[in-house]
Image 1 (cartoon, chains in turn brown, cyan):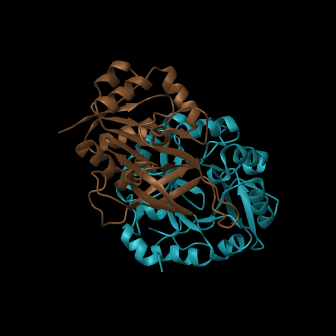
Image 2 (spheres, chains in turn red, cyan; image 1 turned 135 degrees about the horizontal axis):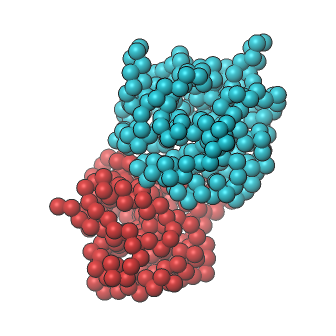
Image 3 (cartoon, chains in turn cyan, green; image 1 turned 180 degrees about the horizontal axis):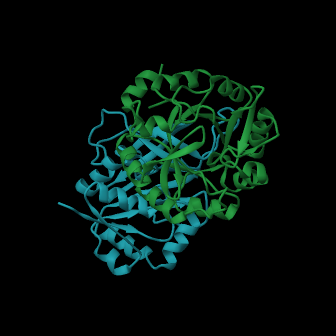
Length: 207
Length: 253
């Protein structure tokens, strides 16, 4: 049965690709910043590419902040943050001064490779995810999963139980988290072909 | 996961896909959207799309078509063709392109490489060069879809591009283009030995073994066009890509 996912449009991110992937896996999406649409949403995707502060400023000025907070914290609808969207679910980011949604006890921090490792920032390219706990996002824990990453900031989870996957880049960083109905992925499922399709399908059908 | 990227290259002409042989006789191959949909299913990790007439015909980039292609692609896209200003680069990133590829403007306006990499980071800026052997057998760069021979020496040029901030150099052999007879391994060696940034080999791939050869001669990644759009000796149009597990087995030694 085809489900309808609400993709929050706050002016940042390539929403077309996400919408197309959702369509490809047999579901529907509604790209919107309309308050009434968000109030009726059953599941939300929070996408994002760009600067943390600009994102939160856009979200705040569109009046979306409180509506999303109520739906997620009170009514417990599942929310999936993608890339910057994942970072917005945290309390703060080293990238800026604005406060995030603070749905999860975590902060976004900048990759800092001092000298010895000489790894490039942003982390850009395909990389693996190492699964740390059971979840609906990754049903098949055995097969190797790779996803496309492009980011200069990563999420540092203060509660270890929230960590869903680790990825290696210099050190291990949190590439996805789950806390109750709150999901965040640092990679771009919409650019990770079959792996992204599987993950989105699981989020839509099982979360 | 593949240690070396294997990148299909799609050539755009008037919003349709074409394939050339030695940069001549473009043959219509189909709608880019259909090709992208097929590559989506084949686990292609990265795709390059080049508009081969935008610069010479002084046309503006067809953003709508590119945005459509990007939205239908479930992998990152590199785009080249007709890019001469930072405003165009900004627009391309906004519509979801991951990497932009500069060719003609690397010679007509090399400052653009520095400007773009300063703003967006070198990882997103690729310089692509097309090479033809001259009468004496020397490799010469030809910009503007192969129509303008550049005097500057090959190695000097690529080292300058690297110094200006290019993140990758895509080296295409015009002589091997579309022939499927194998990459120009001497060319690959010469360039990769004189760069610290990754070099992507292009021009001449006909089978998976050619990929190993290019990689063993210094290519960090390989690109192919004809091999993924034609099939058989009569070159029937067929969009294809080898099975990922087979590529892993053959290339991850």
